[in-house]
Length: 76
Ligand SMILES: [Cu+2]
Figure (cartoon, rainbow, N blue to C red):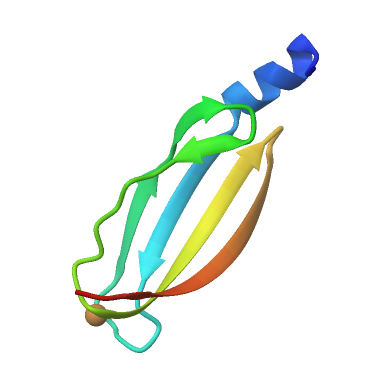
């Protein structure tokens, strides 16, 4: 079980997802992820093009932020 303080920390965390295409230069799409439960956030984004995309997922909590990047391919 999480303590109340730990649970609050998750509820107050901010998670956002930024999508871009590394091989193209048409900018980024940023979406805030919605809190579901501790450790679980959901963001729904529809890539606008077929091809290789990069998702930068940023977690902000206690004034600190960390980012992880994923590469994925959008297919029809
Ligand atoms: Cu593109």
